[in-house]
Amino acid sequence: MRTFSPTNDDITRAWHVVDAEDLVLGRLASEVARILRGKHKPIFAPHLDTGDHVIVVNAAKVVLTADKADKKLVHRHSGYPGGLRSERTSDLLARRPEQVVRRAVRGMLPKGPLGRSMLRKLKIHAGPTHPHAAQQPVRLELPSARRKPAAAAREKG
Image (cartoon, rainbow, N blue to C red; front, side):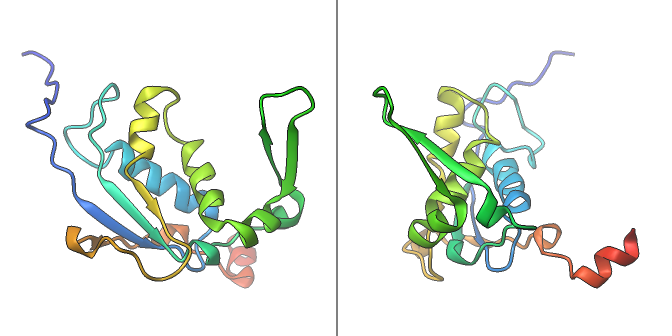
């Protein structure tokens, strides 16, 4: 039997909407990256973009655990000597919350042209509304990305 390799005719792309309110950033990003890659589908192939479109709303209400919001730094470089700029994640979250989520998801996707094509299917909005209603997105619940209460986390050990 030969290995199945999906073609463009085999790939159907659905639209999912994720409400990021009170979700932990890293857990949200890993689930969104999984959907963008298409790992939830039986036709997944690592060398092809078989994933779906994802809309993230309420990106401004995403949660970072511990003191990461204040201690974690986000770096960018202009390309010129001495062009390294750093800022706290809390400042970037207040100024451009979409960028915080996009950077987290981008780090979990393949590097190169394949990862960039997957990242183009990610739409992020800071507020609760989005202009993609015509695509009829399906609500995607991510219970594993919820922040666990401190008391429950201590009991588990």
